[in-house]
Length: 403
Ligand SMILES: Nc1ncnc2c1ncn2[C@@H]1O[C@H](COP(=O)(O)OP(=O)(O)OP(=O)(O)O)[C@@H](O)[C@H]1O
Ligand SMILES: [Mg+2]
Image (cartoon, rainbow, N blue to C red; front, side, top):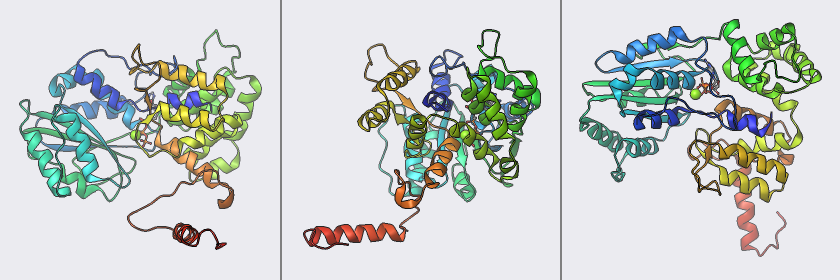
């Protein structure tokens, strides 16, 4: 998978919300002259249900669920940005925030204040409860009462927190997206796998298969690869992007990898399927890809940071750095004068981040180039405490101790 493919796979909901708010433009461009986002393929039924529910009056919590990479964000984007009735109903009052596995309440409310506070300074919150109360108060003062709050990537265990955002306002919807189902919410829209026809169309689109292609794989070969992606849009996008403009041997290699027994038997078929793209990538791309796993989940990564990091580590050849810069230069946020990429950001898909972390963990602990630790609360792994003690000892014994 090239860095380019990786960077193309970014999530656009925030962009859409900005568009909805600014009330202009109906097209979101991809990166790098990448194929523009195709319309939402094969999701008519859940999307229609979602649109109908959003148009109803009153307070409700809608729930959009589906596997990782099944298109939850993509379909939100589609529902919120293309339907004139929904745009009319909510106007600029659509707010988006990511929960992730361990939601930080005051961070979440701060982000929401920034979006809906119309330039108001974000207040200091005394407690999580105070933060949520102040948000409720702010929303209740809105002149236009129809409000939609999108809580993205909610994990089991956060249901009570979602309930706290259920303010009693005249016409207020919360749209929760999650990979797993919760029973307690009002309405469920479930995304399944794409049917073969939609999967084929999506694959063809991202692989840029047309009569100008240098190599045109035969239908059977494409069929096998598309089938192996199991109708998962992210897998279709990554695998097709990897095969774009590649010779027959690469296609054949991918087919063999995707149909081998270990994938079929794995319980993480999604990751293993994406891993095939990783495995056939050049070493330099692998390094860059794994570096992306070092960044926090669901947060924007400043492009300048990537460029500085890769340039400093000299892992990226100058021509590739330039290529990367060109990719990012086509970002919508680019301004004509911003030649240093100060205003450019990328976001990586969380499944791709999972894959990068999974790859890093494949190496023996002592040989890992990257240290990625899942910290939860105040608990620290034993080796971490050992390291801190060793450093302390070294400092206080003038390096005389050999710990
Ligand atoms: N129906 C679709 N048509 C075209 N492209 C799609 C479709 N669904 C998803 N995609 C593309 O697949 C990729 C993954 O989709 P998306 O980020 O929406 O998944 P997700 O369900 O939100 O995943 P996660 O649970 O990991 O957050 C995106 O790049 C998106 O553009
Ligand atoms: Mg998502």
